[in-house]
Length: 618
Image 1 (spheres, rainbow, N blue to C red):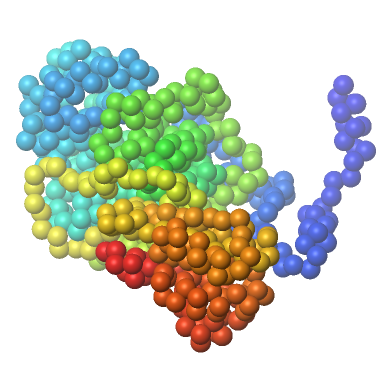
Image 2 (image 1 turned 30 degrees about the vertical axis):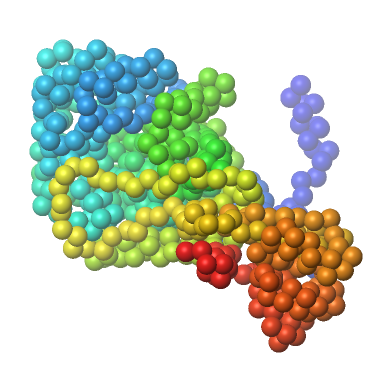
């Protein structure tokens, strides 16, 4: 059988990379290969349309093994299981306990309790964890950073009183003061002195971490993948260095750090991000000379992003979060939180939380994502992405180190400036429809109403009012500007009507009418499409009869010279007149008084804002 296989393959000649390129160039018929087929990513590197074995042979990542340094292929050797985590508001200990025990029977094996700082007490912990077998479920806690040491000590006392095996207690405390500096500009630097005491309180619990790196906040603010990765590494290294400087042994210090990272919509890039993150973090920790390589393992809780979530067509959020969850699962993370689809506009209810749980259960129980370790390993594409992301993220890490470390960088505001610039850029791209938001700036649901849904504001909830003395990250969802526009339209006394005056060439008028309907419905306008009119006068009369506030002329570029001016003059200001396209005769049309044109190169958001203003909508 072996000889047969060898003989079979010897009958085929393996084409070289150059032969592939030559063939592609023939098929391109003279078009520029670099412009047509090479993807220039937002991450600072280019992606080729194909990769071959020779491309991967020069990389180091394929030589790694699962569960071994530098852990690019994951921390696990036998399977790819992860914790399914759900976040619970624990303002009321009894209610939170009831909910926790309920969801533990529905597939959850990781709980995350958000506890008000003033509620932290032995009685509260006792009531919160009553009936929960702490050695069978992962436990995570988030409270005011000023009360985290107290919470850690209370948890240790509780675990000891219950007689739990310290090795079997798995979980974390989300203590990350630097997140407040980054996201709110708050001066909480004095809180950093609590880190050694926090680590000391939990030093006997090897699987319980207490220093958090919440780079998910950067992800939710629009950061590109390399930005989140590079800054997360610098963030973690800052905590590690401070702990070591305070006398904490490096192995213990590294084993207490946990990364809460976001997952964006870039499917393959996110798989590669987590692989690159583990590899780079392992190399960073190695420089502190820990007692064993196990301290170099990066523990990652992955959270689906809220940045691309939408209020309108909200069930599309399920598609977004599902592919994001798949990325993290395939990448071998420690745990995953699926953000419920309605989190952008309301406190998630039982239904949305159930769906979020089931999204992960599907991947485990039906897709068996938890059975194969690092299934993407060996993929030429994924290995290239892993190395490329690592290279670019490392540049960011080194830049931060040159600025004196992460704390110095965020106090100077350079990190915040970088994230804000990216967020602004992405909002501009979305406004120009160069970054698509399905159901929002592309293919909106024409008949959907907000039904009172409004963006949900997030707050710290700890009760402390720290002064903002540093720059802060301006977090805003990508769809927020379009949603505000559409909600403003809904509140108007009359819903604007946009009427498609289709005439002339069948193909062009249909294509432009479809484009215009999608373009204008984004603002919440009622769009009326048509099969076509014989004359512009007939079309204008029909538009006015339909109560049109906007009349959109849809035809071919060549025919606009014939139809546009007569239609504009016949309409005579009785409605706004728009030409769909950018014809060669645009200057002549503008000279005749026509000033509104919509096409793929205009800024959609600014154009619609201008139309709303003309229509008296604020």
